[in-house]
Amino acid sequence: MQRRTSLRVLGVLAIVVAVLGGVGLWLAADQRLDDAVAGLARAPVGCDTVLDFDTADTYLLFVETEGELAAVPGDCDVDRQFEWDEAELPSVTLTLVGPDGAEVDLETEDGVTYDTDASAGTSVESVEIGRPGDHVLRVESDDTGFVVSVGRDPNDGVMALRALAVVVGLAGMAIGLGLLVRANRRSEAASSDVDRWVPPSGAEPPWPISPPGFPVPPPTTGT
Image 1 (cartoon, helix red, strand yellow):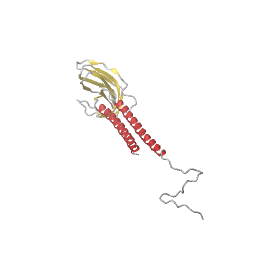
Image 2: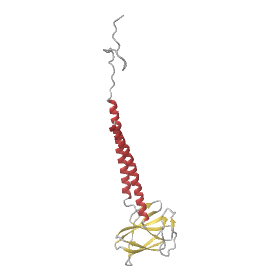
Image 3: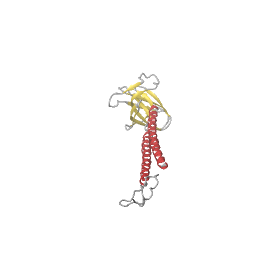
Image 4: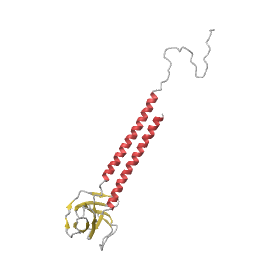
């Protein structure tokens, strides 16, 4: 009995831990994405924006169609809050100049997107920064209602955390349900082991049968 109870408690506990762990990891993945998107540098349309690349690496340039600028450096007269309502991305021309004054080559990159409660963007270019330092990004377009965001892929590590959340949730629930099933089987096995005594059918008992607690009646001597 005690072992069956322990199995049930462990099963329920495993399911609760699986649910909480899976939800926690999924929320951590969402928070990781939010933080990465918030950390992107942003360049408004019609402005020359200084970007400080502190590490040599590959960076992506996104057309961000929804969001809000935390601050607008320089004398650019743009709206801090923006939103692009069209289905197609706006047409934009990007020019990046390195610390030595030479233009840096940009390559087409349209396979990365991000979408959070605060921002949404689609990659349009990528750049290989070989020399860290201040670069100037010029954004030119006849359209408005968007900005260009720059940084590493904000989705890095997010899918891994979400996959881990699913694995933890499913594995924990499987273990918990297995323990509950095992406890139930032990309970059924214990119940089947209890045998009742039944008098033999078709045969008279060798002694009088009386209810428990009553004395056996004395033998009769006839009339």
